[in-house]
Amino acid sequence: LPFGLYIVNSVQEEIGLRGAEMIVERLRPNVAIVTDVCHDTTTPMMNKLEQGDFKSGDGPVLSYAPAVQNNLLKLIIGAAQDNKIDFQRMAASRYTGTDTDAFAFGAGGVASALISLPLRYMHTTVEMVHRNDVESVIKLIYESLLKIENNQEDSKVFSLNQTVNKQVIGFLGSSEISIAEGKVRIVKSPCTKKYCIHHGWINKINQTIVCLPNQITISI
Image (cartoon, rainbow, N blue to C red):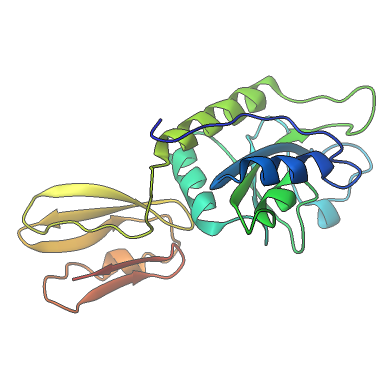
C-alpha cells in the first residue's frame, strides 16, 4: 500500500465513543473506514419503518450520513461493484451511533465511512451473523484499501489521443467512459435514466457531459 495503515480496536463506544475519540486524536488519520454492526430487521419485534430493511446474508450495509464522507463512500461502493460484493444501503439523518462519528468530527475532521455487519438479536447472549456477510465485510475493506491512492484527487485528466475505456467512481458507483478518435462519451452508468449515456460523444472544447445522480462531470 502507498500509505501507512493502522488497524485499531476501540473501547467504551457504548458510553460515548471514548476510545475512538482518543484514537483519532493520537493518530490523526487522513481516512477512517469504520466497521460496526447494525440490526438485521427481520429479527422479531424490529420495526422496518424505523430501522430500515436489512437482512443477514444480503451483504454488508453502507451508510449515508452526515459523518460519512461522500467521496470515500463512492470509492467503497465502486470496490463492491467492481468485485461483485453484494451490499445494502442505510440512511442516517443525524448520526450513525458508531465510532464513525468520533472520527469524522475529530482531529479537525477525518474522511470517514461506515461498513456495518447485519446482526440478529443485538445486545443479547445469542447474537447471530451470517458467515457470508463476515467474509464480504473483510473483502470489501481489503478491496477498498487497494483503491485508495496516496495524495488522491477527486478529478482525473485523460488524453483524447488514445482508444481506451476508463472506470470513473461516482456517488452511485462505477461509470465507464470511452475515448476514441479524439472523442469521449459515457457508455455505462449506475444511474436510472441514462441521460448521460444518451448524450453521446463530445469532441469540442467546453463541451460537457453531466451525470447528476452519479455526480460525474466530463469536460473538454
